[in-house]
Structures are given as structure tokens and as C-alpha cells.
Length: 121
Length: 144
Image (tube, rainbow over all chains, first blue to last red; front, side, top):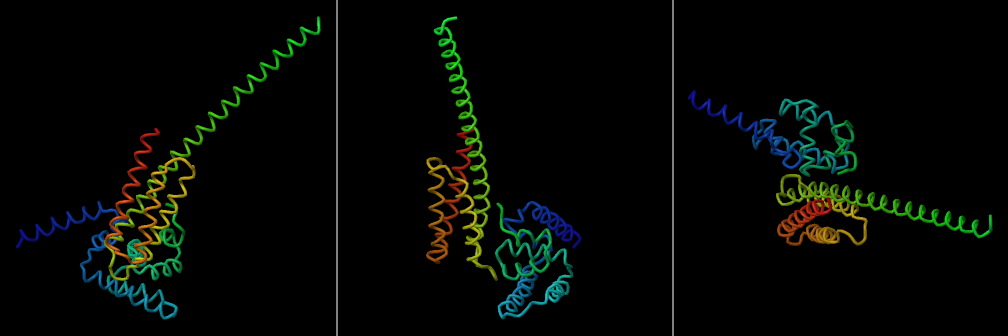
């Protein structure tokens, strides 16, 4: 049992190194999953939250971003700073881009310039 | 002093003046050529970098189909990169092979947008990007 735990710790450490060596622009979701220590179900839950707000935007309603942040806080225990990383990763992977763009415009900051401002190169 | 001597002195001074003007004109042309050459190097290098970013987007096109993923947005991003790269090649008779690749990439991207054989066209688009990047790298080595 102890041996198994050691093996798991070793794998965790190796995975964290893999995560660090990934290019977050080229593999945004893989980098995010490793950095957040998520599994596929966690990723699905994040998708569910984005999907919910995509639906709100599609229906023409004004989304409540405090609720968006609260959903992430409740589901993953993350705050605004970490949520910025999640939004950037989804946007870089061209997923739920409408939600990401409206959120980024509402919460304008340096990190979101790559979403809100035109690309240089 | 006869008027002949004065005429000769005038002629010699005019000749010296002409020579200096010609020498300066040559210097300006050399300088202009050097600036054009440097600008071309910078443009090719920038185009290569832009195309590398575009190729990353092409890879996302190859793996597309995730939840909430928009192929149209990926295509828009690839298009933006292609336009930016194309704008780096302003000299008419140079780097025609690279421009040809970019035109071919535009055609393939159009097909992907139309959803005509998307996976094959996306794979071909990725290859054309790779070839264009390769050509940019080779051109930089050649002209350096």
C-alpha cells in the first residue's frame, strides 16, 4: 500500500513536470487540466457552467457574472484570479468564445487583452 | 589671365561637381538598397512567426469538435494570421513562392469553412502552413 502511494506521488510529480513543459497556447486545455488537478468529470463540469452562460447570452438576457464566478467558486473552490486562467484556456482553445469575450470585456484587465484587443502576432 | 584659362577652370570645377553628385547619388542608392534588404529580412522573419501561430490554430482545427468549440472562430483566427503574413510581402517580384503558398492556404481555408471534406482539407492546410514556414526559414538563410 505504501509502495502504491509512493508510485502515485511519483506520477503526480512527473505529471506536474509534463504540465510545466506544455505550451499553454498550443495545448491550453491539457495545461489547464494538469495545473488545476482536474479529471475529465471536472472538465465537464466547467463546460456545463460555460454552456449555462452561453444559453443565457443566446436568449438575449444579461448574464450575472457574479453568479458565474460563484458557480466556479462553489464547484472548484477557485476565485477570480484562477478563473481568469480558465477563461483564457477555453478561449485559446476556441471553446465557448462568446462567453469568454463578453466576460473579458466586463472584467477588463491585462490578462484579458489577448481576448479583448486585436491580435498583433 | 586669358578667358581660355577661366573657361578651363570652370569646366574642371563643373566636372568635379558632377563627379561628387554622381558619387553621392550612388551612396544614396546603396543606402536605399540596404534599407530595402533589411526591411525584407524583418518582414520574412515576422511572417514566419505569424505563420507559426497560424499553424497552432491549424492543429486545433485538426483536433476540433470539443464541447462549445467553434470551427468558424478557428477559421477566422487562421484567416487573420494569413492576412497578416500576406501583408508582410509587399515587393512585387520577390518571394513569389511564399505568396503562392499563402494563396493556396487561403483556398484550403475557404474549403474548410464550406465544410467540404473538412478533415482532409484541415490536414492539407496544416501541411501548406508548414511548407510556408520552411520557405521563410530557407529564404532567411539564403539572403543573410
